[in-house]
Amino acid sequence: MLPGMSFEDRVVLITGGANGFGRATGARLTEQGAKVVLADIEEEAGEEAAAEIGAEFVSCDVRDPESSVAAVDFAVSKFGGLDVAFLNAGVSTGCGLVETFDLELYRRAMQINLDGVVYGINAAVPAMRRRGGGSIVATASLAGLTAVPFDPIYAANKHAVVGLVRSAGPVYALESIRINAICPGFSDTRIIDGFKESLRNEGVPIIEVEEVVDGIVSLIDSPDSGVCHFVQAGMNPQEFRFRNIPGPKVSQA
Image 1 (spheres, helix red, strand yellow):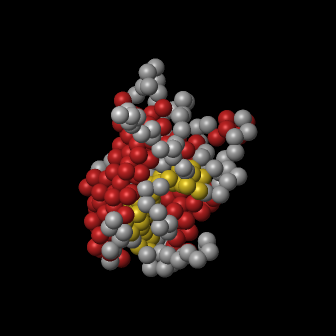
Image 2: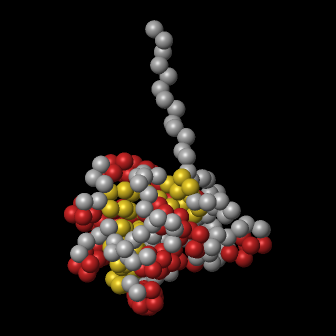
Image 3: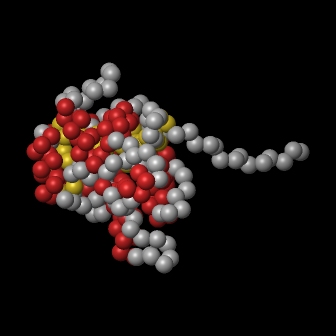
C-alpha cells in the first residue's frame, strides 16, 4: 500500500478486469478495502479473477455503449454508487496501414482502445455526479506520447485517448470528477505476447505489472485532472510535461 492512501469502501469499476493491469489493480484495491467490480468480455476468466481477489464480476463489451452503462448500473446497484472507474480494456492492433491493413482488425482496435474510453466516461460521469465526485483513469500508453512507426494505428488510438483526457479533465474537474491517463511503456501483459522475446533479445526492459499498478493507484487518488502519467523502466511514475503550442505572432503597430 502506498503511504497515506486508503480506498476503504470506495466503489471501483475496472474494464478489462480479467487480466493484466485490470486484474492486478483490482487485487490491490480490494486489499485496501475497496469494493471492486471487474468488467470484461471474457466471462470465464473474469469470474475466476473476481473470485480469486474478492471482487464482483459483470460481463461488458466496451465497444457497446449500452454495455458500459449496464456495467456502471451493476456497480451502483450492488454497492450503492460509483467512486472510481479504471477504463483499462485494450488490445493490440494486429494490422498496418497499407499492405497488412485489415478493416475488421482496425475497427476492433479503435472501438476497444478509444470508443471504450469514450463510452466508459459517458457512463461513469452521471453516477459520479450523484456521489459528488469521483476519479476516472484511462489506460493509454507511451505510444500515446510519441511516434510509433511499427504500429501507427495503435499510436493513433492511444494519442486519441491522451487528447481526450487532457481536454475533458479540466472540464469535469469543475464537478470534482477527475479524468486522467496512465501511459506505461512495454509491460509484462498479453498485449506484448507476440514480440516479448524480441524485446528481450534487443535488451528492451519490460516493466513489471505491479510497478504499473503503483502508478495507476497513485493517479486514481491524485487531485489532478487532465494529466497523463508515464510509467517507464527505472523511473518513478510521473506526469508527462507537454510543451505548449506556439502562440500567434502579433504584428507590432
